[in-house]
Length: 405
Ligand code: CTP
Image 1 (tube, rainbow, N blue to C red):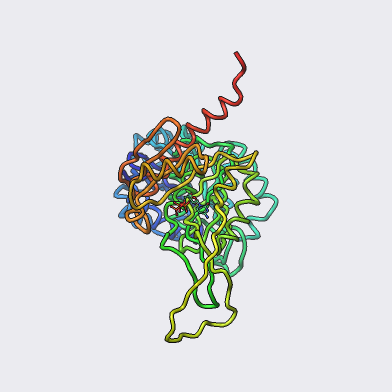
Image 2: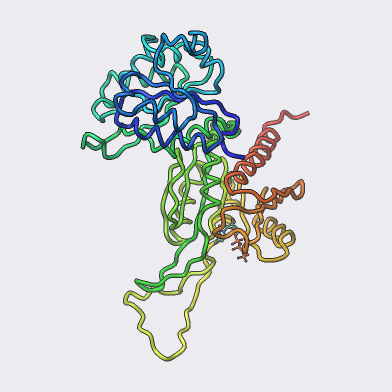
């Protein structure tokens, strides 16, 4: 099912160059299954015409407070009664100030004041405007009023300056909105995720690695963030974008991954080890490129440490979840691996189907037995897995805090 199926979103657009990105955002929202109604401030119509948004949303665009044709002339009240959320993107510094002070001098500001639904705001402004104490005071107040901020991002700005204040990209705003609607099952918890392949250099141009794409681990990191956790992702080399809200640490070899995981594990409540860690590394690294010859070349390999097993065996171990890629006898091999690594939960998948693909089927093994998560895309599976982890984690912590009889 698309992410925002049956969600009714009122997209408010205010004046700023980033208004052009709201066109792509409207398209993505519709594609994600949302029912979108667009309202624009007068300044926004100077950047992009209402006609563009009418064509993209399939509905008339609202611009006038006194438009008596719409909703009996009570659009500012009616509109927010019939939506699940209002998203202002882009939100100018001026509009944010209006929100903070409860001003209501046009349709968009009035409907924000009259709303009976959550409000999400994606700031977009020049970096000096963002840094200005007045804006920072307003942002602080907005958060205090229960408004959800999406961004801003740092980077190059339309004015040529560089800094914080750029609106998030449309795909990130879509991810932020989807996250907003997910249940906060891991609120207040810190989750550490490892993902992707590791790479062991043989000489300056050759390496031993595997075909893991990182898709599953990145989906788990995203789903944990959506569930309200503070997420750190230790990632091997992949071409994946860091999920919104996730802190990423990039590593290359299994040794580097072990160090990065080890140094964060004591802060984590939950560790999900999705990475395809190389089991062996070359016994020695050759500083110059190995030249070819007609003779057989033998590589000596040394075993790498099992990162998950080491973390799971610590006295202060977080709740550890392993992944197992198996080619046969999934249940037997999986359960043996779970016992050997002493894990409360192990996720088994068929290596031939899992590596690199967009979808998968997962078999969850825990103390209660086995649970199948049937074929679905990896984000859907990751969300289901996070729900299962949250249940086990809550059970475990309730158990350990239970009062004696
Ligand atoms: N793992 C790890 N460190 C390693 C090898 C694996 O932390 N050096 C973790 C993986 O991230 C995964 C789990 O252990 O969560 C199982 O990995 P898998 O490759 O399926 O199994 P192995 O333990 O390597 O055993 P085998 O390759 O023999 O199946």
